[in-house]
Length: 256
Length: 256
Image (cartoon, rainbow over all chains, first blue to last red; front, side, top):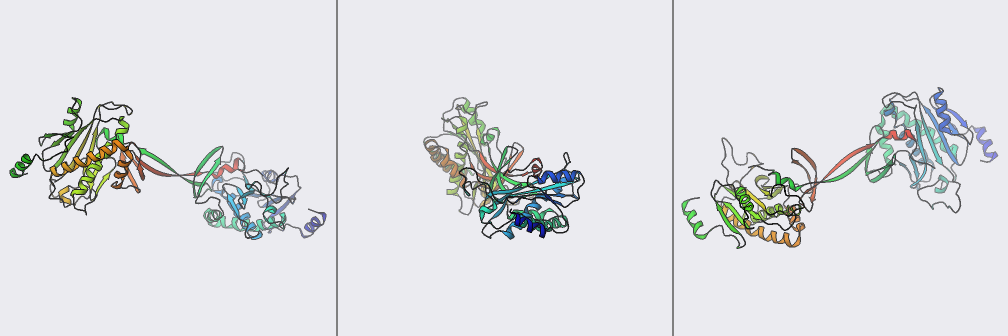
């Protein structure tokens, strides 16, 4: 960001968040999630919105105070994803596909472009209401390409500016995200997880198709048929068993 | 059977089997399978065809000398089923459906009408060539209905004469079965089990559909997708597992 742009930002106080949020700007080297967790542990207000002031990468984290048990509150991660999905959907060219990789990945035209994180108090039981949650969001806006790397060489990784969004700035995305996220948080509180989860599935990569997910070093393969109420991925697998014909040697299955 | 008919049978030596068989007639109270097993143990020739001389019920058993290991020889039960299936198919009115219930049941218009049995030397290992096998066949030709029972009251059970085959006699069926079985035994020996198994599936109840099979007191449910080379029923089942979203609390699935 050049000095001129910085000046404009400060003057116009960009990003401008809806009043429910308390904006907390962090220097370029800071870790937004770490800062938000530290603040949450110290009793920071819910809706404190930490964001890192850099232009190559969006790094943000929001302090949340859920009313549900941890297990029921987990889909707030998906609420965050549909918030950024809708925000990008409104900002980027229509030919750019914004999709979600379960559980927490953001994809642009099929390549990994960012992700979300969720932090809870250590040792919080699934059925206990956590004192706080922190939702983190990271998006690569520009990439520094190393050595002979060129955009598109590795189709599994990308940055927004490589996908035809060269005009898009971090504050633009932060503002749009803050609004869309707020909308969906309210819907989540009022209507429960299903509307959010169904909306998530609209951008869900491999939804209704065969997929393989690596989770804690084990691969789970199957058909991705939906999400459960706690945001878990429902994976249908088929097994074929052979009932042995040798059973007939023990006697007939019929009697007349 | 009246005396006149009996006389004709004796004169014409009905049933007339193809010369490969040795016909062994048993009195009405005999158990064909038991008689054939006793004879097989005592070294009876292969293709000895035991049949019980009664008109209400077809009871027959054939001594066989397989060349394969027991495991590979098991589908001879299915060869027996397609033998009787084709025999009945040629004898009964075309509107009568002859079907097979895995592993060993014969059905007429959906009701149980008979079945097959297979006996092998006790303790014969699956990979050992048995000294003998005995294939048993039982069909209800006429039923004695008890109390207030009427044909069709219980659609799961029937007899050939209740399904519009009042003209059909036990010797007719025995003759047709002996010919069709011989044909398919030869095909089984020359081409292996697949042609027989595919032909079996043409009359296989619930083939390609959802089914539930009770085997040794446990119920197996799934889609009946075929038979393996040993005549085992291939049952496809679907399971849905939920990959928990709580995995995100341990750290992101992505790195940028």
